[in-house]
Image (cartoon, rainbow, N blue to C red; front, side, top):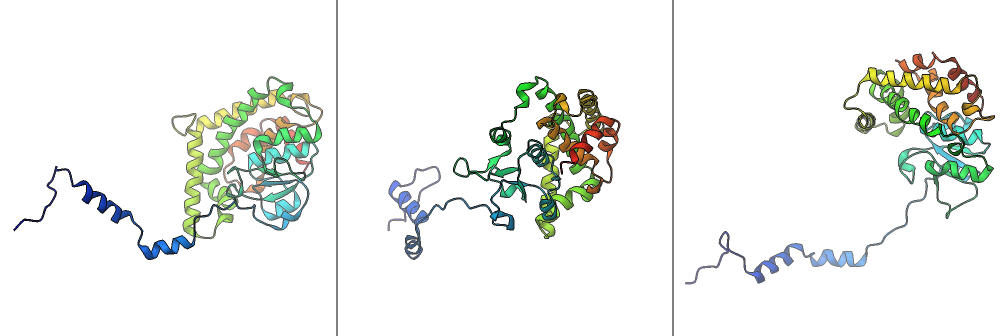
Length: 297
């Protein structure tokens, strides 16, 4: 009697048998295959932007972090990046409606973005990186970066020193996170406890990761000291002028500074510990600059 053939360990299997087994393993059962044959794979176009009551307006629409009441009344956004462009468009005289939104609704994954009243590029939304170029084309205002070589140098103070201190104050300070960040960014997203917890962890981790791009660890004292130096430099730059770089009207740099100074000094946000506010109030000209620009809203 011939024993049944088995492939011994270390011995190459029979090619025919192995191929047959592979086909059997990966093959789709006939009944299932017949079902999928009736429903071929289809690639659908991207989803349209969600319809909300403001979607029917025909003017320019700027999508930012805000609530419904703030959008109706044109209040400043509670997000610095959104407020920067909201303020800039107002300063250069462009009319627009504010639409409450979030990063998940943005085609680029970040706010703000703008849907213009007169479509360009097949009505594609305009991300923040192209908003200044679009605004210049609309009202023929000048581009500040080309008018003053100091623009980029001082802008780095906002983009790094002040921003990092802001990230810590809002997201990593436990009391401020519970009192300010969660009501603004977490609670409106969901009523589910697990979802809120996950989102809170993600926000705090994202802030920590951003700070650690320029530091080996999160040093609160160092962050506040750098922010203090940045405020002093900005105060010196502004001097006795009404606007930065002695412009007759506020421009992009004024909007960039206002985006932080307004929110830092806005007690309506519910700050529990506001060390940045204490540092900023040492410079009266920056405080007055914020008050003047707030009148646009």
